[in-house]
Image (cartoon, rainbow, N blue to C red; front, side):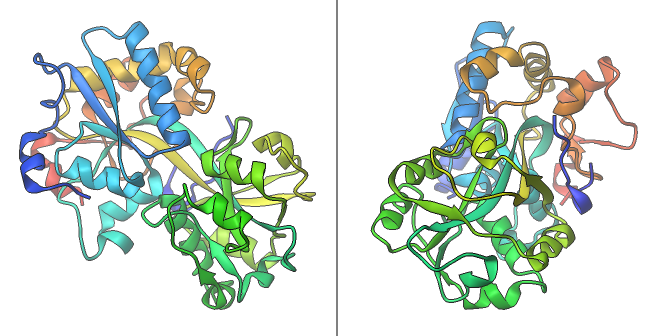
Length: 350
């Protein structure tokens, strides 16, 4: 799939001293078999831990360690500095890192994370406190709106969509709230946030802080407008999905009053540093394919059940880690139009 239209198939850096010591593949046990994977908090962390269980049960000559990172962007920077061997990162962040766009414009990375396999999709939309007058997206003008924590890719993608010409007039009138996701549910309960994004994996449920404010605050869906739908469709870094049973799709504990939800979607993937040994990435890809059920038993949000799903978030003209590429080739799942990364050319793919 191309990031020009990522409609999905259903299916800070720390100090230089740490970067110098934390070379990829060298931060684990003495024999170098531990792959350290960066992951942000919430549902993404749960997926990392679920996959860690699958590696523990079924891995051969590889170990796996989940390391908390500050969002997908922060994980990308940590991979660039060699602090982790890989990380769970969304495709929109990856594309921006490749092009030194947006948050990477003033602080570009020297090397980008390489593609491995799909972790899960996130679908994003907006809800408002029930005691506000907010009913449609246009009503967000002048409201205190929380688009997730600064540094979160769900936030960056949301603000990108809202900055599209179709809806930028509404966005420019919003009062954007900056705070950690841990503090947001309390702020909503206290009335300091009027509306916030909600997101989760369809069929599995909402992410952590959304689950928390669902339990603490009465909210309703902010009805999408035609202009918002057009903005989602035209934004190249996310896809459009529609849901007509959102309470079941995302496991809301309350009726949010939605006959249909229109969401902007992110594909979240396992990616790897270019110096992470190919045999380790091959083995992790094999485990994802052959033993994904073990990861799902631990965390249902890990969704890919076959090779087509594992590669469904493929970015055109973006390098795949050689270990993942070899596994797909061995299992007749490789597309000859895809690019295999060359570690000697790692800095040339940006």
